[in-house]
Amino acid sequence: MEKREYIPRIIDPKLDEYLSTFGAVCVEGPKWCGKTWTSAHHSKSEIFIGDPAGNFQNRQLAEMSPELVLDGEAPRLIDEWQEVPPIWDAVRYRVDQSAEKGRFILTGSATPNHKGILHSGAGRIARLRMRPMSLYESGDSTGQVSLAALCRGELAPVMTGEPDLKELIRLIIRGGWPGSLGLPAERAALLPEEYLNAVVDDDVYRMDGVKRNTVKMRLLLRSLARNESTTATNRKLRSDISEIDDEDIDVETVKEYLDIFERLFITDNQLPFSTGVRSSVRVKQAVKRHFADPSLACALLRVSPEGLLGDLNTLGFLFEAMCERDLKIYAESFGGALYHYQDYQGREIDAVIELTDGRWCAFEIKLGANQIDSAAEGLLKLKKEFTEDPKGRPPEVLCVICGLSKAAYRRPDGVFVVPVTALKN
Image (cartoon, rainbow, N blue to C red; front, top):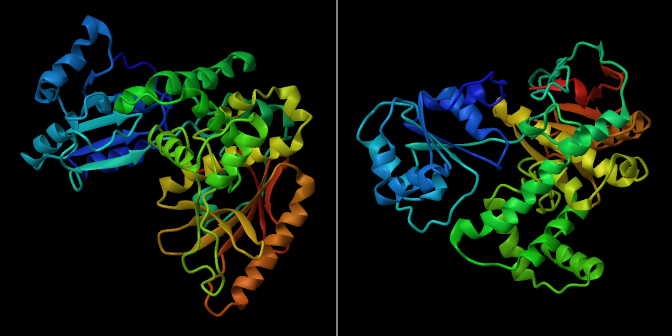
């Protein structure tokens, strides 16, 4: 693979760390997010299983004998290994024969079922999740504020520039796809649309050879788009399809298709947070619905920049999705994990970052600067309740992530305010 100028990714140091620790690393995530390019940057030889050259000769070789595609200078990249699942066991076996680290990098844009994979690879093959570009990686965030430092309560006040609502809308619709960088907005919007067509029309079948109802799959995807950044249950999605699209789909089919979307990395849900937060309060366990990138929801909803300017409610949910995509990427780079909080008393926190030592930080996400005061007030109220609960653990840091703020600063009440376009890991 020709090594053109490489755009650094936040995952780079983690991939180097894993290569020095494990015999093989599997980099997995949605199609077109940059897995192959990043993995090739870290490899010294490669083979592309999906290469159509020679009537898919590479795939045919791997199908005849997976061992045939393993030889090469390490780290050796094996791209789209899931096209021939027995490659997994062949890599695991080769790693077992040597104590050498960093032998292979596998990339995958789908998680196949376990048929044909005899061993999990635990301890030999580490999994590393890659996502579309954050705003910092794509050059659309100044990176003046480090999330890692912020989670330690450290922030030097700084002016971050005049906010631009139309630019935020452009970034949401474009998404974090490397192939969209530098494209005009109307052309960049075509990529997520074609992505979804390719996945539904081709990848779903190729994953396990089972034909499914693609019409109902698309209806479910559109329902997920209408419920982006919400905790809609499977039954709510089913009802939504029935009410909006006048189509019947049973809950078991919804469950099956959601599992497929997850295995294809189309969705990237935000898990609920409860550990040690308020053990005396019953906490909801619903996931917050997200696509791998907010641009996918935009494509499904067929939104335009002008349309979003006239629909601030939808824009707010999509802006939240973009922020939470970035928070997840940034937090995972320093060992943090992103959750959301919701209890049965109506209290919610948009984003919770749990650190490796058990401390946690609470974030509210607001598009407009006029919403900062109410968001800060809500965070302070929740912290007070957590503090007064003898069984609970209050958050260490409170922060409002904003779209239309022109400065990063700490308020007199202790709540931080940070524009998403100034954030980095």
